[in-house]
Every structure is written in structure tokens, then in C-alpha cells.
Amino acid sequence: MSFDALANRGEYLSAYYLAEVLPRDLKKKDEGLLARWALQENKGRETPRVGIRALRREYLVAKAELADLGDEDKRREPLRNLHTKVLERLGYRSSAAVSPREPRPVTVERAGREHQVLVAHAEPGITVIECGWAVDPDAVTDPDDAGRLLYPVELDRRDRIDAGFTLAGWLFSADQHPPRYVLILSGAVLTLADRLTWGEGRYLSVSLDAAFARNDTRAAGELDVIAALFSADSLRPPAAPALGRPPQTPGRTAPTPAAAQPSPRPRAMPSVPRHGPRPADLAARHDPETEPSRNHGPRGPQRSPRRPCRRPTRGNPRRPARHARQYRRPLGDLRTS
Image 1 (cartoon, rainbow, N blue to C red):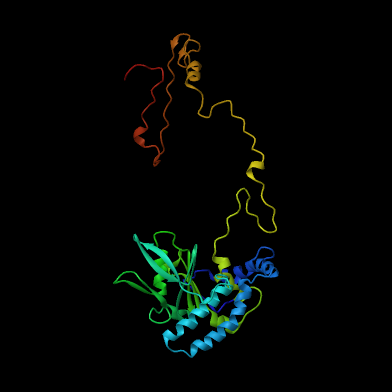
Image 2: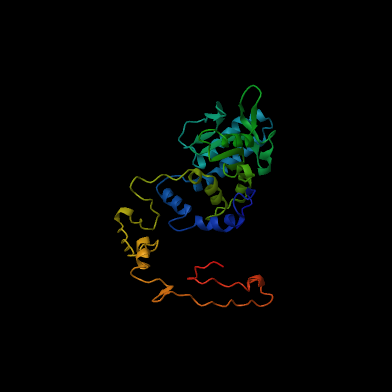
């Protein structure tokens, strides 16, 4: 299955995962994301799967309005309204929130100095920023056109950040609590920047214009995959389980706590230490008073017979010929040569 609306820059996700693994995981019974969204929809909650389908009509109306406005200053307010709808449909902002949406100031500390940055949305781990109007994912890299920030960041009297891609890298290098994801809204293009892969030039973009033109509403189709990759439900960290309760997987029984499991049976220690016999045992074993030595017989010291040394064969590199005539000294011979 191919998704033409997605731009997988630098292979942020493998092609096999996008085409085969991700759609199969979404459709898993009782464990997939679509199954969880179905349960929430039965309770009356609007999920990102329903939201992205409802966003199609709102996008077409906003696109027609933005096409008639050639001036960038005139596009600012309709563009902000479109970005607000995108945040609401993908679950970042409640539809019951106060409208119109105003940019949110966020304090970012860099090199011991604090800076104020205006963002569209901010929560732990996720920051959303706004850029100009774009339909093609390649156009958002232009810092002078679609990649230009709606609210540039003034660092000091000389430095200023105007491009969305530059601001994403700047946020990732914050001194304290940098975001894991930065979502760049550029009209019809959404760009997902990951702090772990941004320095390698790997990120994910999607063209809502191409996706809404195809309007693939099948289960685990293109719209469902976009909702699964860019929604707040997928980017937010999972909730921590309650204390004393292990996390449970739907459809599976919880594992037995460690306190309730029987303790393992202790192994019997060997009678002989692993480091070998003690020195006292060795001394008693070779006591000359209780046991004669190996070279002492009833008539005194015995001389062991000489053992002829085997002459090495010619050409044997292991036993050189210069050692052929050397004889081993007997153990009981105390005479010096």
C-alpha cells in the first residue's frame, strides 16, 4: 500500500513499515489504534480519525479563500484559522476552546539566557509552530516564502530566527526540557520534526491537499495513517500506570506481581570449595613422617632410571634438533654436573 501524500525525508520511517507493518498494526483487533478509536467514538468522543475526515470540507473552503489573497499580510488571519482547525481535528486543542486562538508565548532558555517564542500550541514533549502557506512539502524548506515563520523570534538586536526549520533545530537544543516533537504547520503541509533524527535530516511531511484530493477513507487507508502519525494521541507520551498496578494489555491477563510469585528454591552448596583443597590438606597428604617420599625407598634415596630423549624427525619445527642430546636430570640426583 502506497501513500502519495506522505513525504518520508531521509527515510524517517522505513518504506516497508509504512506500506506493510503500520496498516496491519492499525487494524489489529482489540489492540490496534483504530479499535481504540472505535471504542471512544461509541462513547461520543471525536477521534482524530473522524476529525481528519471532517477537516476536508473546512480545508477546501479555506483553500479557496487563500487562493484569492495574494498578499502575505492578508493571508495571515485565514491561515491562522486553518491552523486552528487542524489542531482541533487532530486532538491538540479542544473544539470548545475560546476562539479566536491567540499565539502562546513560551519561555526557552538557551546558553543561560531566556527567550520568548510565540507558538501555536505547547505541551510537555510537543511544540507546534506556524509558517506560511504551502501545498507541496518541498516548498516548506524555502525560508523566504512558505517556510517563513508567522511570528519570527527576536534573539537579540542582531540575531533573529525567521525560518520554521531553523526554529525547530533551535528548540531541540534548549538547555532545559527540549521538546521531543516539533510540528510545523504550513497551510496544507504538516511537517513532523523528531529531536532524535532532526540532526540527520530525517523527518516526515504530509500534503493535506493531495490526501483530500484522493480521499482514501478505507480502514487503515491514507487518511487513517495520517491521523495515526500526526495526531496528538500518537505523539503524546503514554500515561504512567498507577502505583502498585502493572500496565495491562487489552485482551491479556495481567502478570503476577513479584511479591506473589514463589521464591526460587536455594541450591545446595557443594561440600568441596570451588577454589580447591586447602593448603593444610596438601601438607598432610605429603607428610614425610607418615608417608615416604616418592624417591625414598627402604635403602635410601633411589635414583630413577634415565629416560632417553626421543630424537625429533628432520624438519619438525616443534622440537628443534639442538635439544635432541639433552637429558632430563633425575629427581633424586642431588649431585651437580
